Image 1 (cartoon, rainbow, N blue to C red):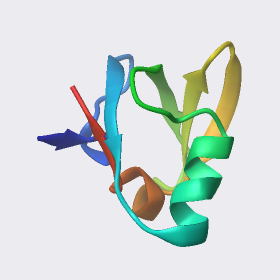
Image 2: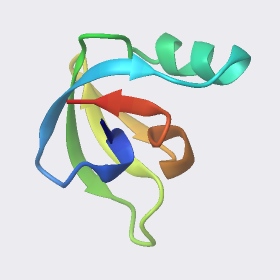
Image 3: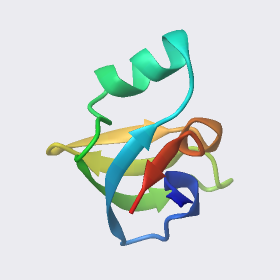
Length: 73
């Protein structure tokens, strides 16, 4: 499966699963990255990290290390 980190700019994907454990997984879910949620990748920061995504109508910055834990389709 593909991860959010592998998503291209301008692409809309749907969250399939959030990997990780404990506080990391909880933080992702608290930010709205839950199963079935649509995520639109807006852009990358000038140095490539973090990435800016639109989730549930608001913009969110996600580090690439955290994006690698989010499985999408």
